[in-house]
Image (cartoon, rainbow, N blue to C red; front, side):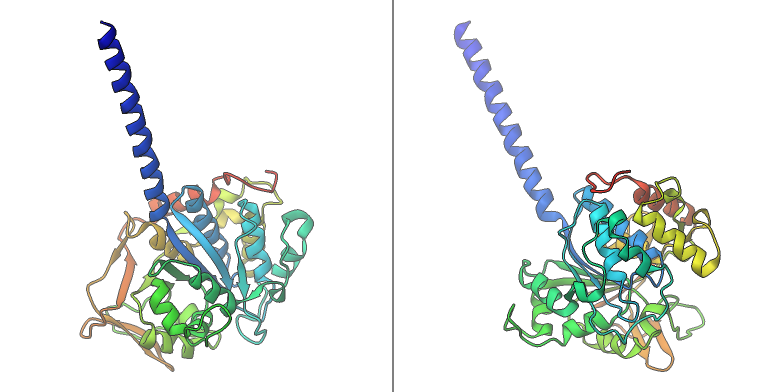
Length: 355
């Protein structure tokens, strides 16, 4: 009986150790599988950039993603970097590196969400960055983030202009690496996920001139990237009928997410938060982290073509093996909106701002 008890105790102990070891390896696997991302945004041009950052942080809270850094690639309204920093602070991640364009002649010229006012309210939002010049220059930061990352591990997400990624691709060797931009991207980047070419897949075969890929003098940069980006590229066309933002209405007045949505909707459309805004940028982040899930799907093989005067078009009679076109499934807009609203309305696990 004594030997049996000792044997039973030994077996239980062994099982416990094996379970602990299994959980430990499971934890390591989870960490290893987290999507490593750099987010490139034109924060302030629209409020769905705010929702996209909120969604990305929500996924980080769930352990699904590691946010390596955020790039604000506009310059004419040079306070978007301050909003980016304030959102990082709100989610308890004030140390996420923020890069910004130091070219103040490029981008959307209108401060649609009163970014200057919000960025300067450091007492409310606790951000340390206010102006773009307070942030690291965007190309220098992107190069450093790539150098410090494992090979073929980084997803570069563009929900704004294409100039930032163009400059990274064409960058020269610097103190961080002797490699050129294209060499660094080829070695370190896994894929490019971009909100762009909205409506480029259409039955009429029309060329489209969407905001991210064509407007604000960004067409030349887009054209170059489409032809020269060396890794798989996923163009996301989703979110136009997916309205989000109302889940932020009940949060406190000093919530940076609520303030940005409120000010953009009122300033641009004369609407309230409950009227909401399409979710193009959120859908792109969703795809980058979750994949197709239950809301998105990939079209058959083809290629994105681009014309500097006419815009972009997705064609099926020509195949570029690096090009992928992602669209929204039919009849999922309401469910997709509910999913996204719940995510961006969820309180951060750790925050420096009292709710």
